[in-house]
Length: 116
Image (cartoon, rainbow, N blue to C red; front, side, top):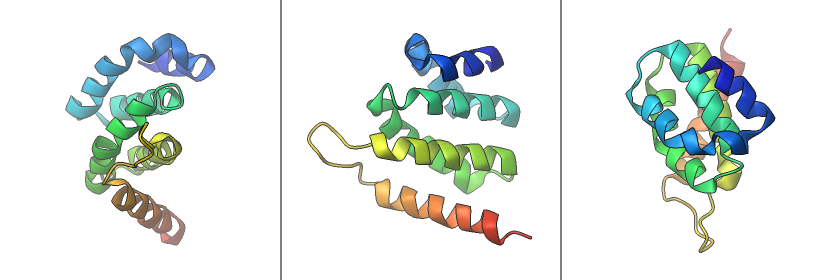
């Protein structure tokens, strides 16, 4: 996962076909190290596949709401903010959970700034 994550930063199109497997890892793994790498990898793909950006909103929001690991929390919020510009559907509408996701990101980033 680590090597693919690094390579996907250089040329994400080469790894789009692996998105379903990595999404499955995102939703089934409880290993924080693995989740950090998978979140980063999927974040590198959202610009190439807007449907993935919309699909990531719910599981990444779940991570933000439930994890105690600051590094995973940061990566999930960072990837959500990468995904936000790509969430518009072809009909011009946005996912119904988008305002809640934006508020969640804002609140979480605020805690990073306010945390001593």
